Image 1 (cartoon, rainbow, N blue to C red):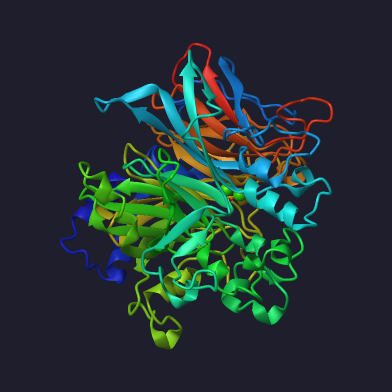
Image 2: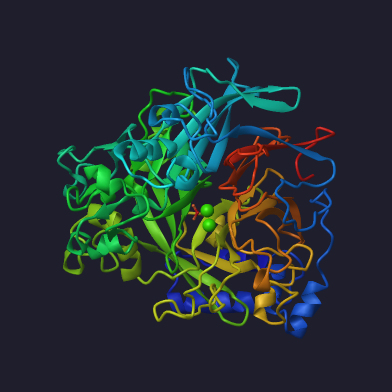
Length: 637
Ligand code: FEO
Ligand code: CA
Ligand code: CA
Protein backbone atom coordinates (compact mmCIF):
# COMPACT_ATOMS: atom_id res chain seq x y z
CA UNK A 1 0.00 0.00 0.00
CA UNK A 2 2.86 2.33 0.69
CA UNK A 3 3.89 2.13 -2.92
CA UNK A 4 0.52 3.41 -3.92
CA UNK A 5 0.48 6.11 -1.31
CA UNK A 6 3.73 7.47 -2.65
CA UNK A 7 2.12 7.73 -6.05
CA UNK A 8 -0.77 9.65 -4.58
CA UNK A 9 1.31 11.93 -2.46
CA UNK A 10 3.41 12.87 -5.45
CA UNK A 11 0.41 14.56 -7.01
CA UNK A 12 0.11 18.23 -6.24
CA UNK A 13 -3.50 18.53 -7.31
CA UNK A 14 -6.62 16.54 -6.57
CA UNK A 15 -7.83 17.29 -10.06
CA UNK A 16 -5.87 14.48 -11.66
CA UNK A 17 -7.17 13.69 -15.11
CA UNK A 18 -8.69 10.27 -15.18
CA UNK A 19 -6.33 8.98 -17.83
CA UNK A 20 -3.35 10.25 -15.90
CA UNK A 21 -4.69 8.75 -12.71
CA UNK A 22 -5.32 5.42 -14.37
CA UNK A 23 -1.75 5.38 -15.59
CA UNK A 24 -0.56 5.89 -12.05
CA UNK A 25 -2.74 3.09 -10.83
CA UNK A 26 -1.55 0.79 -13.58
CA UNK A 27 1.97 1.48 -12.47
CA UNK A 28 1.07 0.77 -8.86
CA UNK A 29 -0.71 -2.43 -9.77
CA UNK A 30 2.16 -3.69 -11.86
CA UNK A 31 4.48 -3.20 -8.91
CA UNK A 32 2.20 -5.07 -6.56
CA UNK A 33 3.23 -8.42 -7.87
CA UNK A 34 6.62 -7.70 -6.38
CA UNK A 35 5.29 -6.99 -2.92
CA UNK A 36 5.45 -9.58 -0.21
CA UNK A 37 2.65 -9.94 2.31
CA UNK A 38 0.00 -7.35 3.01
CA UNK A 39 -2.03 -6.31 0.04
CA UNK A 40 -0.06 -8.53 -2.27
CA UNK A 41 -1.66 -11.57 -0.67
CA UNK A 42 -5.07 -10.51 -1.84
CA UNK A 43 -3.77 -10.16 -5.33
CA UNK A 44 -2.10 -13.53 -5.01
CA UNK A 45 -5.44 -15.24 -4.99
CA UNK A 46 -6.07 -14.25 -8.54
CA UNK A 47 -2.85 -15.79 -9.61
CA UNK A 48 -3.75 -19.13 -8.13
CA UNK A 49 -3.07 -20.80 -11.47
CA UNK A 50 0.05 -18.81 -12.21
CA UNK A 51 3.68 -19.01 -11.06
CA UNK A 52 3.33 -15.58 -9.51
CA UNK A 53 0.51 -16.80 -7.33
CA UNK A 54 2.43 -19.78 -6.12
CA UNK A 55 5.39 -17.60 -5.26
CA UNK A 56 3.32 -15.13 -3.28
CA UNK A 57 1.19 -17.83 -1.70
CA UNK A 58 4.34 -19.37 -0.33
CA UNK A 59 4.82 -16.16 1.61
CA UNK A 60 1.65 -16.75 3.67
CA UNK A 61 2.94 -17.02 7.20
CA UNK A 62 1.14 -18.36 10.25
CA UNK A 63 -0.44 -15.36 11.90
CA UNK A 64 0.82 -13.97 15.18
CA UNK A 65 -2.44 -12.02 15.46
CA UNK A 66 -4.69 -15.09 15.57
CA UNK A 67 -4.20 -16.85 18.89
CA UNK A 68 -6.77 -19.63 18.63
CA UNK A 69 -6.83 -22.97 16.88
CA UNK A 70 -9.14 -22.97 13.89
CA UNK A 71 -12.06 -25.38 14.10
CA UNK A 72 -13.36 -27.81 11.49
CA UNK A 73 -16.55 -27.33 9.51
CA UNK A 74 -19.63 -28.73 11.23
CA UNK A 75 -23.15 -29.77 10.32
CA UNK A 76 -24.22 -30.27 13.92
CA UNK A 77 -27.15 -28.40 15.43
CA UNK A 78 -24.85 -26.60 17.83
CA UNK A 79 -22.67 -23.51 18.17
CA UNK A 80 -19.05 -24.61 17.90
CA UNK A 81 -16.07 -22.52 19.05
CA UNK A 82 -12.36 -23.22 19.57
CA UNK A 83 -10.88 -24.93 22.60
CA UNK A 84 -10.63 -22.52 25.51
CA UNK A 85 -13.78 -20.59 24.55
CA UNK A 86 -17.29 -20.84 25.94
CA UNK A 87 -20.67 -19.71 24.72
CA UNK A 88 -23.91 -18.73 26.41
CA UNK A 89 -27.20 -17.22 25.30
CA UNK A 90 -27.81 -13.55 26.09
CA UNK A 91 -31.33 -13.21 24.70
CA UNK A 92 -33.58 -15.07 22.28
CA UNK A 93 -36.55 -14.06 20.14
CA UNK A 94 -39.62 -13.58 22.35
CA UNK A 95 -37.77 -13.06 25.64
CA UNK A 96 -39.53 -10.34 27.67
CA UNK A 97 -37.92 -6.92 27.43
CA UNK A 98 -40.45 -4.32 28.56
CA UNK A 99 -42.14 -4.32 31.98
CA UNK A 100 -45.16 -6.60 32.01
CA UNK A 101 -44.24 -8.52 28.88
CA UNK A 102 -44.86 -12.26 29.19
CA UNK A 103 -42.43 -15.10 28.64
CA UNK A 104 -42.11 -16.55 25.16
CA UNK A 105 -44.80 -19.11 24.42
CA UNK A 106 -43.45 -21.99 22.38
CA UNK A 107 -47.03 -23.00 21.55
CA UNK A 108 -47.45 -19.76 19.60
CA UNK A 109 -49.90 -18.10 21.98
CA UNK A 110 -48.15 -14.74 22.24
CA UNK A 111 -50.22 -11.86 20.87
CA UNK A 112 -49.13 -8.83 18.89
CA UNK A 113 -49.15 -6.83 22.15
CA UNK A 114 -46.95 -9.49 23.79
CA UNK A 115 -44.50 -9.38 20.91
CA UNK A 116 -44.29 -5.59 21.13
CA UNK A 117 -42.82 -6.03 24.64
CA UNK A 118 -40.55 -8.94 23.75
CA UNK A 119 -37.25 -9.25 21.90
CA UNK A 120 -37.98 -9.05 18.17
CA UNK A 121 -37.27 -11.81 15.69
CA UNK A 122 -34.23 -12.49 13.50
CA UNK A 123 -31.47 -10.68 15.36
CA UNK A 124 -29.00 -8.92 13.05
CA UNK A 125 -26.66 -5.92 13.34
CA UNK A 126 -26.03 -4.65 16.87
CA UNK A 127 -23.79 -2.35 18.87
CA UNK A 128 -22.86 -2.26 22.55
CA UNK A 129 -22.68 1.14 24.26
CA UNK A 130 -21.06 1.21 27.69
CA UNK A 131 -22.31 3.57 30.37
CA UNK A 132 -20.05 6.44 31.25
CA UNK A 133 -19.36 7.37 34.84
CA UNK A 134 -19.56 10.92 36.15
CA UNK A 135 -15.84 11.41 35.50
CA UNK A 136 -16.29 10.42 31.85
CA UNK A 137 -14.64 7.02 32.16
CA UNK A 138 -16.30 3.89 30.80
CA UNK A 139 -18.16 1.63 33.20
CA UNK A 140 -16.84 -1.79 32.18
CA UNK A 141 -19.85 -3.66 33.55
CA UNK A 142 -22.92 -1.67 32.45
CA UNK A 143 -24.07 -1.08 28.91
CA UNK A 144 -26.99 -0.91 26.56
CA UNK A 145 -27.17 -3.13 23.53
CA UNK A 146 -29.00 -1.84 20.46
CA UNK A 147 -30.07 -4.68 18.18
CA UNK A 148 -31.74 -4.97 14.78
CA UNK A 149 -34.65 -7.38 14.34
CA UNK A 150 -34.52 -7.82 10.60
CA UNK A 151 -37.59 -9.81 9.67
CA UNK A 152 -39.73 -12.68 10.95
CA UNK A 153 -40.42 -16.28 10.11
CA UNK A 154 -44.16 -16.79 9.74
CA UNK A 155 -43.80 -20.54 10.12
CA UNK A 156 -42.70 -19.96 13.71
CA UNK A 157 -44.33 -16.60 14.47
CA UNK A 158 -47.89 -17.36 13.45
CA UNK A 159 -50.04 -20.31 14.42
CA UNK A 160 -51.12 -21.02 10.87
CA UNK A 161 -47.75 -20.15 9.37
CA UNK A 162 -49.26 -17.36 7.30
CA UNK A 163 -50.84 -13.95 7.84
CA UNK A 164 -54.61 -14.29 7.72
CA UNK A 165 -55.76 -11.35 9.81
CA UNK A 166 -54.92 -7.84 10.93
CA UNK A 167 -53.81 -9.31 14.29
CA UNK A 168 -51.33 -11.56 12.47
CA UNK A 169 -49.97 -8.55 10.59
CA UNK A 170 -49.72 -6.54 13.81
CA UNK A 171 -47.75 -9.35 15.43
CA UNK A 172 -45.41 -9.46 12.46
CA UNK A 173 -44.97 -5.69 12.59
CA UNK A 174 -44.14 -5.93 16.30
CA UNK A 175 -41.51 -8.62 15.63
CA UNK A 176 -39.61 -6.22 13.33
CA UNK A 177 -37.55 -3.15 14.09
CA UNK A 178 -35.06 -2.74 16.92
CA UNK A 179 -34.67 -3.81 20.52
CA UNK A 180 -32.60 -1.95 23.10
CA UNK A 181 -31.74 -3.72 26.35
CA UNK A 182 -29.64 -2.78 29.34
CA UNK A 183 -26.86 -5.27 30.13
CA UNK A 184 -24.87 -5.84 33.32
CA UNK A 185 -21.73 -7.93 33.65
CA UNK A 186 -21.22 -10.16 36.67
CA UNK A 187 -17.90 -11.94 36.67
CA UNK A 188 -17.21 -12.31 32.98
CA UNK A 189 -20.83 -13.03 31.99
CA UNK A 190 -23.35 -10.46 30.86
CA UNK A 191 -27.10 -10.67 31.37
CA UNK A 192 -29.87 -8.41 30.19
CA UNK A 193 -31.99 -6.48 32.71
CA UNK A 194 -35.65 -7.37 32.19
CA UNK A 195 -37.30 -4.29 33.55
CA UNK A 196 -34.72 -1.61 32.91
CA UNK A 197 -36.20 1.80 32.15
CA UNK A 198 -33.71 1.92 29.26
CA UNK A 199 -35.20 -1.09 27.51
CA UNK A 200 -37.02 -0.18 24.33
CA UNK A 201 -38.79 -1.74 21.42
CA UNK A 202 -38.80 0.17 18.16
CA UNK A 203 -41.18 -1.24 15.55
CA UNK A 204 -43.63 -0.22 12.84
CA UNK A 205 -45.63 2.02 15.17
CA UNK A 206 -42.70 4.03 16.54
CA UNK A 207 -42.81 7.68 15.50
CA UNK A 208 -39.78 8.85 13.52
CA UNK A 209 -38.74 11.97 11.68
CA UNK A 210 -37.52 12.35 8.13
CA UNK A 211 -34.51 14.68 8.12
CA UNK A 212 -32.34 16.08 5.36
CA UNK A 213 -33.13 17.01 1.74
CA UNK A 214 -36.10 14.65 1.36
CA UNK A 215 -37.99 15.84 4.45
CA UNK A 216 -41.15 17.67 3.42
CA UNK A 217 -40.84 16.73 -0.26
CA UNK A 218 -43.86 15.78 -2.34
CA UNK A 219 -42.44 12.30 -2.90
CA UNK A 220 -42.79 11.44 0.80
CA UNK A 221 -46.15 13.07 1.53
CA UNK A 222 -49.09 10.80 2.32
CA UNK A 223 -52.68 11.36 3.40
CA UNK A 224 -51.66 10.49 6.96
CA UNK A 225 -48.61 12.75 6.80
CA UNK A 226 -49.36 15.69 4.52
CA UNK A 227 -46.19 17.43 5.70
CA UNK A 228 -43.96 14.54 4.59
CA UNK A 229 -41.92 14.57 7.79
CA UNK A 230 -43.43 12.07 10.20
CA UNK A 231 -42.99 8.35 9.55
CA UNK A 232 -44.12 5.47 11.69
CA UNK A 233 -41.55 2.78 12.02
CA UNK A 234 -38.50 1.22 10.55
CA UNK A 235 -38.42 -2.18 8.91
CA UNK A 236 -36.10 -4.92 7.67
CA UNK A 237 -33.24 -3.49 9.69
CA UNK A 238 -30.30 -5.51 8.49
CA UNK A 239 -26.98 -4.35 9.81
CA UNK A 240 -26.01 -1.15 11.51
CA UNK A 241 -23.32 1.26 12.59
CA UNK A 242 -22.37 3.52 15.43
CA UNK A 243 -21.23 7.09 15.72
CA UNK A 244 -18.51 8.55 17.96
CA UNK A 245 -21.21 10.70 19.55
CA UNK A 246 -22.96 7.67 21.00
CA UNK A 247 -25.84 7.09 18.60
CA UNK A 248 -26.82 3.96 16.72
CA UNK A 249 -27.46 3.76 12.98
CA UNK A 250 -29.92 1.07 11.91
CA UNK A 251 -30.20 0.30 8.20
CA UNK A 252 -33.40 -0.47 6.30
CA UNK A 253 -32.75 -3.22 3.75
CA UNK A 254 -35.38 -5.48 2.17
CA UNK A 255 -38.35 -3.18 2.74
CA UNK A 256 -39.90 -4.26 -0.55
CA UNK A 257 -41.29 -7.40 1.05
CA UNK A 258 -43.77 -5.62 3.29
CA UNK A 259 -45.37 -3.67 0.44
CA UNK A 260 -47.87 -4.81 -2.16
CA UNK A 261 -50.50 -3.44 -4.50
CA UNK A 262 -53.78 -4.41 -6.04
CA UNK A 263 -52.77 -3.81 -9.66
CA UNK A 264 -49.52 -3.95 -11.61
CA UNK A 265 -50.04 -0.38 -12.82
CA UNK A 266 -49.88 0.84 -9.22
CA UNK A 267 -46.24 -0.22 -8.94
CA UNK A 268 -44.06 2.25 -10.89
CA UNK A 269 -40.74 1.11 -12.29
CA UNK A 270 -38.72 2.87 -9.61
CA UNK A 271 -40.50 0.80 -6.95
CA UNK A 272 -40.55 -2.39 -8.99
CA UNK A 273 -36.76 -2.22 -9.21
CA UNK A 274 -36.69 -2.85 -5.46
CA UNK A 275 -38.89 -5.91 -5.91
CA UNK A 276 -42.23 -4.43 -4.85
CA UNK A 277 -45.00 -6.21 -6.73
CA UNK A 278 -48.76 -6.31 -7.05
CA UNK A 279 -50.43 -9.24 -5.36
CA UNK A 280 -47.56 -9.81 -2.92
CA UNK A 281 -48.47 -13.03 -1.12
CA UNK A 282 -45.85 -13.68 1.53
CA UNK A 283 -46.07 -10.90 4.10
CA UNK A 284 -49.58 -9.78 3.07
CA UNK A 285 -49.39 -6.58 5.09
CA UNK A 286 -50.90 -4.66 2.19
CA UNK A 287 -54.04 -6.79 2.42
CA UNK A 288 -54.68 -5.79 6.03
CA UNK A 289 -53.09 -2.35 6.40
CA UNK A 290 -53.61 0.27 3.68
CA UNK A 291 -50.32 1.92 4.58
CA UNK A 292 -48.48 -0.91 2.81
CA UNK A 293 -50.79 -0.99 -0.21
CA UNK A 294 -49.40 1.10 -3.07
CA UNK A 295 -52.85 1.25 -4.62
CA UNK A 296 -53.91 3.24 -1.55
CA UNK A 297 -50.67 4.82 -0.31
CA UNK A 298 -48.30 5.09 -3.28
CA UNK A 299 -45.63 7.18 -1.53
CA UNK A 300 -45.21 5.03 1.59
CA UNK A 301 -42.28 2.99 0.15
CA UNK A 302 -40.36 6.26 -0.34
CA UNK A 303 -40.37 6.62 3.44
CA UNK A 304 -38.35 3.39 3.82
CA UNK A 305 -34.91 2.35 2.56
CA UNK A 306 -33.08 4.87 4.74
CA UNK A 307 -30.53 4.83 7.52
CA UNK A 308 -32.08 5.71 10.86
CA UNK A 309 -30.12 7.27 13.73
CA UNK A 310 -31.18 7.22 17.38
CA UNK A 311 -29.86 7.57 20.92
CA UNK A 312 -29.83 4.14 22.57
CA UNK A 313 -29.69 5.67 26.05
CA UNK A 314 -32.91 7.68 25.65
CA UNK A 315 -36.01 5.52 25.19
CA UNK A 316 -38.08 8.64 24.57
CA UNK A 317 -35.90 9.98 21.77
CA UNK A 318 -37.30 10.14 18.27
CA UNK A 319 -35.37 8.12 15.69
CA UNK A 320 -34.24 10.22 12.73
CA UNK A 321 -34.32 8.93 9.14
CA UNK A 322 -31.21 10.36 7.48
CA UNK A 323 -32.23 10.94 3.89
CA UNK A 324 -28.96 12.61 2.89
CA UNK A 325 -27.38 9.13 2.95
CA UNK A 326 -29.57 7.86 0.14
CA UNK A 327 -32.39 5.37 -0.30
CA UNK A 328 -31.29 1.86 -1.20
CA UNK A 329 -31.38 -1.58 0.41
CA UNK A 330 -28.96 -0.47 3.09
CA UNK A 331 -26.83 -3.21 4.59
CA UNK A 332 -24.75 -1.40 7.20
CA UNK A 333 -23.19 1.99 7.85
CA UNK A 334 -19.47 2.20 8.62
CA UNK A 335 -18.52 5.62 9.93
CA UNK A 336 -15.02 7.01 10.05
CA UNK A 337 -14.04 10.46 11.22
CA UNK A 338 -11.63 11.79 8.65
CA UNK A 339 -8.37 13.37 9.76
CA UNK A 340 -9.79 16.83 9.06
CA UNK A 341 -12.98 16.17 11.03
CA UNK A 342 -15.44 15.42 8.25
CA UNK A 343 -17.57 12.40 8.93
CA UNK A 344 -17.58 9.72 6.24
CA UNK A 345 -20.07 6.85 6.07
CA UNK A 346 -19.46 3.87 3.79
CA UNK A 347 -22.52 1.85 2.76
CA UNK A 348 -23.45 -1.13 0.60
CA UNK A 349 -26.70 -1.68 -1.31
CA UNK A 350 -27.38 -5.40 -1.11
CA UNK A 351 -28.85 -6.46 -4.39
CA UNK A 352 -27.33 -8.15 -7.41
CA UNK A 353 -25.68 -5.53 -9.57
CA UNK A 354 -26.12 -2.65 -7.10
CA UNK A 355 -23.47 -0.36 -5.72
CA UNK A 356 -21.21 0.89 -2.93
CA UNK A 357 -21.77 4.41 -1.57
CA UNK A 358 -20.00 7.02 0.52
CA UNK A 359 -21.46 9.99 2.39
CA UNK A 360 -19.32 12.95 3.45
CA UNK A 361 -20.78 15.34 6.01
CA UNK A 362 -21.01 19.05 5.35
CA UNK A 363 -20.03 19.89 8.90
CA UNK A 364 -17.10 18.69 10.95
CA UNK A 365 -17.07 16.46 14.00
CA UNK A 366 -16.44 18.36 17.23
CA UNK A 367 -15.38 15.99 20.04
CA UNK A 368 -16.55 18.59 22.57
CA UNK A 369 -20.02 19.17 21.13
CA UNK A 370 -22.14 16.06 20.72
CA UNK A 371 -25.32 18.11 20.41
CA UNK A 372 -23.92 19.56 17.18
CA UNK A 373 -22.54 16.20 16.08
CA UNK A 374 -26.05 14.79 16.23
CA UNK A 375 -26.93 16.92 13.21
CA UNK A 376 -23.95 15.88 11.06
CA UNK A 377 -25.92 13.26 9.13
CA UNK A 378 -28.55 15.79 8.07
CA UNK A 379 -26.44 17.44 5.41
CA UNK A 380 -23.61 16.32 3.18
CA UNK A 381 -22.66 14.83 -0.15
CA UNK A 382 -23.41 11.34 -1.40
CA UNK A 383 -21.09 9.50 -3.79
CA UNK A 384 -21.17 6.15 -5.56
CA UNK A 385 -18.15 4.01 -6.38
CA UNK A 386 -16.69 3.21 -9.75
CA UNK A 387 -14.04 0.48 -9.67
CA UNK A 388 -11.69 0.59 -12.64
CA UNK A 389 -9.15 -2.12 -12.80
CA UNK A 390 -7.05 -4.77 -14.25
CA UNK A 391 -8.75 -8.01 -15.19
CA UNK A 392 -5.54 -9.94 -14.65
CA UNK A 393 -4.68 -8.71 -11.18
CA UNK A 394 -8.16 -7.71 -10.01
CA UNK A 395 -6.82 -4.52 -8.58
CA UNK A 396 -6.86 -0.96 -9.72
CA UNK A 397 -8.06 2.52 -9.06
CA UNK A 398 -11.48 3.85 -8.45
CA UNK A 399 -13.35 7.07 -8.05
CA UNK A 400 -16.29 8.36 -6.11
CA UNK A 401 -18.87 9.96 -8.36
CA UNK A 402 -20.94 12.70 -6.78
CA UNK A 403 -24.69 12.26 -6.65
CA UNK A 404 -25.69 15.89 -6.42
CA UNK A 405 -28.46 17.50 -8.39
CA UNK A 406 -27.15 19.42 -11.39
CA UNK A 407 -23.91 17.45 -11.55
CA UNK A 408 -22.96 14.40 -13.62
CA UNK A 409 -26.18 14.57 -15.60
CA UNK A 410 -28.48 14.45 -12.57
CA UNK A 411 -30.80 17.06 -13.99
CA UNK A 412 -34.52 17.61 -14.45
CA UNK A 413 -34.23 16.60 -18.11
CA UNK A 414 -32.90 13.26 -16.97
CA UNK A 415 -35.62 12.69 -14.40
CA UNK A 416 -34.16 14.24 -11.29
CA UNK A 417 -36.07 17.43 -10.49
CA UNK A 418 -34.10 18.24 -7.36
CA UNK A 419 -31.78 16.71 -4.76
CA UNK A 420 -34.68 15.04 -2.97
CA UNK A 421 -35.52 13.14 -6.14
CA UNK A 422 -31.86 12.15 -6.58
CA UNK A 423 -31.95 10.70 -3.05
CA UNK A 424 -35.33 8.96 -3.25
CA UNK A 425 -34.14 7.42 -6.54
CA UNK A 426 -30.56 6.82 -5.45
CA UNK A 427 -30.23 3.64 -7.49
CA UNK A 428 -31.34 5.33 -10.69
CA UNK A 429 -28.93 8.19 -10.04
CA UNK A 430 -26.07 5.76 -9.45
CA UNK A 431 -26.75 3.97 -12.71
CA UNK A 432 -27.02 7.27 -14.54
CA UNK A 433 -23.51 8.31 -13.51
CA UNK A 434 -21.85 5.00 -14.38
CA UNK A 435 -21.39 3.30 -11.01
CA UNK A 436 -19.88 -0.18 -11.09
CA UNK A 437 -22.34 -3.04 -10.66
CA UNK A 438 -21.25 -5.19 -7.73
CA UNK A 439 -21.91 -8.73 -6.49
CA UNK A 440 -24.35 -7.73 -3.71
CA UNK A 441 -22.46 -5.38 -1.37
CA UNK A 442 -23.10 -6.37 2.23
CA UNK A 443 -21.14 -5.09 5.26
CA UNK A 444 -18.40 -2.48 5.09
CA UNK A 445 -15.76 -2.22 7.80
CA UNK A 446 -12.73 0.06 8.19
CA UNK A 447 -9.50 -1.21 9.71
CA UNK A 448 -8.87 1.05 12.72
CA UNK A 449 -5.13 0.57 12.37
CA UNK A 450 -4.63 1.78 8.79
CA UNK A 451 -7.91 3.14 7.42
CA UNK A 452 -8.28 0.50 4.72
CA UNK A 453 -11.94 -0.23 4.04
CA UNK A 454 -13.29 -3.72 3.34
CA UNK A 455 -16.64 -4.77 1.88
CA UNK A 456 -18.17 -8.21 1.48
CA UNK A 457 -19.60 -8.99 -1.96
CA UNK A 458 -21.64 -11.96 -0.92
CA UNK A 459 -22.55 -13.68 -4.22
CA UNK A 460 -24.34 -12.95 -7.48
CA UNK A 461 -25.85 -15.57 -9.72
CA UNK A 462 -26.54 -12.92 -12.37
CA UNK A 463 -22.90 -11.92 -12.81
CA UNK A 464 -21.87 -12.61 -16.35
CA UNK A 465 -25.30 -14.00 -17.11
CA UNK A 466 -27.21 -10.74 -17.44
CA UNK A 467 -26.22 -8.21 -20.03
CA UNK A 468 -26.22 -5.34 -17.54
CA UNK A 469 -23.96 -7.25 -15.16
CA UNK A 470 -20.91 -8.23 -17.21
CA UNK A 471 -17.74 -9.49 -15.58
CA UNK A 472 -15.48 -6.73 -14.34
CA UNK A 473 -12.20 -6.61 -12.48
CA UNK A 474 -13.82 -6.38 -9.04
CA UNK A 475 -16.55 -8.92 -9.79
CA UNK A 476 -14.66 -11.42 -11.90
CA UNK A 477 -16.59 -14.70 -11.76
CA UNK A 478 -19.64 -15.69 -13.77
CA UNK A 479 -22.56 -17.00 -11.74
CA UNK A 480 -20.60 -16.10 -8.62
CA UNK A 481 -21.94 -18.40 -5.91
CA UNK A 482 -19.05 -18.04 -3.46
CA UNK A 483 -18.50 -14.30 -3.04
CA UNK A 484 -15.42 -12.15 -2.44
CA UNK A 485 -14.14 -9.37 -0.20
CA UNK A 486 -12.97 -6.15 -1.78
CA UNK A 487 -10.91 -3.48 -0.05
CA UNK A 488 -9.81 0.01 -0.89
CA UNK A 489 -7.62 2.77 0.43
CA UNK A 490 -8.46 6.43 0.02
CA UNK A 491 -6.04 8.62 -1.85
CA UNK A 492 -3.57 10.04 0.64
CA UNK A 493 -5.48 8.33 3.45
CA UNK A 494 -8.14 11.03 3.00
CA UNK A 495 -11.59 9.47 3.14
CA UNK A 496 -13.10 12.56 1.51
CA UNK A 497 -10.87 12.17 -1.57
CA UNK A 498 -12.49 11.36 -4.89
CA UNK A 499 -9.99 8.63 -5.72
CA UNK A 500 -8.86 5.38 -4.20
CA UNK A 501 -6.98 2.18 -4.97
CA UNK A 502 -8.47 -1.24 -4.44
CA UNK A 503 -7.92 -4.96 -4.70
CA UNK A 504 -9.67 -8.15 -3.66
CA UNK A 505 -8.61 -9.47 -0.24
CA UNK A 506 -10.06 -12.87 -0.93
CA UNK A 507 -12.18 -14.87 -3.30
CA UNK A 508 -14.19 -17.49 -1.45
CA UNK A 509 -14.24 -20.85 -3.17
CA UNK A 510 -13.87 -24.57 -2.83
CA UNK A 511 -10.39 -25.93 -3.57
CA UNK A 512 -11.61 -29.50 -3.07
CA UNK A 513 -14.11 -29.16 -5.92
CA UNK A 514 -12.42 -26.76 -8.32
CA UNK A 515 -8.98 -26.14 -9.76
CA UNK A 516 -9.80 -22.85 -11.42
CA UNK A 517 -10.85 -19.44 -10.13
CA UNK A 518 -13.76 -21.09 -8.29
CA UNK A 519 -11.20 -22.74 -6.00
CA UNK A 520 -10.86 -19.31 -4.43
CA UNK A 521 -7.84 -17.21 -3.63
CA UNK A 522 -4.63 -18.71 -2.29
CA UNK A 523 -5.60 -18.01 1.32
CA UNK A 524 -8.65 -20.27 0.99
CA UNK A 525 -7.92 -23.90 1.86
CA UNK A 526 -9.82 -27.12 2.51
CA UNK A 527 -9.56 -26.24 6.22
CA UNK A 528 -11.08 -22.73 6.17
CA UNK A 529 -13.34 -22.66 3.12
CA UNK A 530 -16.73 -20.98 3.27
CA UNK A 531 -19.17 -19.23 0.96
CA UNK A 532 -21.13 -15.98 0.92
CA UNK A 533 -19.27 -13.66 3.28
CA UNK A 534 -21.77 -11.17 4.68
CA UNK A 535 -21.12 -9.72 8.16
CA UNK A 536 -17.75 -8.08 8.59
CA UNK A 537 -16.00 -6.27 11.40
CA UNK A 538 -12.57 -5.31 12.65
CA UNK A 539 -11.64 -5.48 16.30
CA UNK A 540 -9.25 -3.04 17.98
CA UNK A 541 -6.19 -5.13 17.08
CA UNK A 542 -7.07 -5.34 13.40
CA UNK A 543 -8.47 -8.86 13.31
CA UNK A 544 -11.05 -9.07 10.56
CA UNK A 545 -14.12 -11.09 11.55
CA UNK A 546 -16.10 -12.54 8.64
CA UNK A 547 -19.64 -13.91 9.10
CA UNK A 548 -21.39 -16.00 6.49
CA UNK A 549 -24.91 -16.22 5.07
CA UNK A 550 -24.64 -18.83 2.40
CA UNK A 551 -25.39 -22.28 1.12
CA UNK A 552 -25.15 -24.70 4.05
CA UNK A 553 -26.05 -27.82 2.04
CA UNK A 554 -22.53 -29.17 2.55
CA UNK A 555 -22.85 -30.80 -0.87
CA UNK A 556 -21.67 -30.31 -4.42
CA UNK A 557 -19.91 -26.98 -4.85
CA UNK A 558 -20.40 -26.41 -1.12
CA UNK A 559 -19.16 -29.82 0.04
CA UNK A 560 -17.01 -29.59 3.14
CA UNK A 561 -18.13 -26.09 4.14
CA UNK A 562 -20.76 -27.16 6.66
CA UNK A 563 -23.11 -24.75 8.38
CA UNK A 564 -22.83 -20.98 8.26
CA UNK A 565 -19.93 -19.75 10.28
CA UNK A 566 -17.56 -17.02 11.39
CA UNK A 567 -13.93 -16.74 10.41
CA UNK A 568 -11.12 -14.50 11.48
CA UNK A 569 -8.50 -13.08 9.12
CA UNK A 570 -5.14 -11.50 9.61
CA UNK A 571 -5.16 -8.99 6.78
CA UNK A 572 -1.39 -8.58 6.94
CA UNK A 573 -0.38 -12.23 6.68
CA UNK A 574 -3.48 -13.18 4.73
CA UNK A 575 -4.24 -16.14 6.96
CA UNK A 576 -7.87 -17.02 7.67
CA UNK A 577 -9.07 -19.37 10.42
CA UNK A 578 -12.53 -20.66 11.21
CA UNK A 579 -13.61 -19.44 14.67
CA UNK A 580 -17.26 -20.41 15.02
CA UNK A 581 -19.82 -22.61 13.32
CA UNK A 582 -23.53 -21.96 13.82
CA UNK A 583 -26.36 -24.45 14.37
CA UNK A 584 -28.58 -25.99 11.70
CA UNK A 585 -30.12 -23.69 9.14
CA UNK A 586 -28.90 -20.44 10.62
CA UNK A 587 -27.14 -17.40 9.27
CA UNK A 588 -24.41 -15.99 11.49
CA UNK A 589 -24.92 -12.22 11.56
CA UNK A 590 -24.49 -9.34 13.99
CA UNK A 591 -21.25 -8.65 15.82
CA UNK A 592 -20.18 -6.40 18.66
CA UNK A 593 -17.74 -6.49 21.56
CA UNK A 594 -17.45 -5.29 25.11
CA UNK A 595 -15.05 -2.39 25.44
CA UNK A 596 -12.28 -4.69 26.69
CA UNK A 597 -12.87 -7.11 23.80
CA UNK A 598 -13.23 -9.95 26.30
CA UNK A 599 -16.84 -10.64 25.33
CA UNK A 600 -17.96 -11.05 21.76
CA UNK A 601 -21.67 -10.88 20.95
CA UNK A 602 -22.72 -12.78 17.82
CA UNK A 603 -26.16 -13.21 16.30
CA UNK A 604 -27.55 -16.59 15.31
CA UNK A 605 -30.37 -15.75 12.91
CA UNK A 606 -33.22 -17.94 11.68
CA UNK A 607 -32.01 -21.33 12.96
CA UNK A 608 -34.19 -24.22 11.83
CA UNK A 609 -33.20 -27.01 14.22
CA UNK A 610 -33.76 -26.98 17.96
CA UNK A 611 -31.36 -24.14 18.89
CA UNK A 612 -31.27 -22.64 21.47
CA UNK A 613 -33.67 -24.54 23.70
CA UNK A 614 -33.10 -28.07 22.45
CA UNK A 615 -36.37 -29.08 24.08
CA UNK A 616 -38.88 -31.36 22.45
CA UNK A 617 -41.53 -29.25 20.76
CA UNK A 618 -39.60 -26.03 21.22
CA UNK A 619 -39.38 -23.59 18.36
CA UNK A 620 -35.96 -22.61 17.05
CA UNK A 621 -35.26 -19.02 18.02
CA UNK A 622 -32.90 -16.40 16.69
CA UNK A 623 -30.58 -15.56 19.57
CA UNK A 624 -27.58 -13.52 20.58
CA UNK A 625 -24.68 -15.67 21.75
CA UNK A 626 -21.98 -14.40 24.10
CA UNK A 627 -18.48 -15.75 23.64
CA UNK A 628 -15.85 -15.51 26.33
CA UNK A 629 -12.52 -17.15 27.00
CA UNK A 630 -12.10 -19.55 29.88
CA UNK A 631 -8.99 -17.62 30.89
CA UNK A 632 -10.79 -14.28 30.55
CA UNK A 633 -8.60 -13.08 27.70
CA UNK A 634 -9.25 -11.02 24.59
CA UNK A 635 -11.33 -12.81 21.97
CA UNK A 636 -9.22 -14.06 19.09
CA UNK A 637 -5.88 -13.15 20.67
FE1 FEO B 1 -29.83 -8.46 5.56
FE2 FEO B 1 -27.94 -8.14 2.97
O1 FEO B 1 -28.43 -8.91 4.49
CA1 CA C 1 -26.50 -9.39 5.67
CA1 CA D 1 -26.76 -12.09 3.03
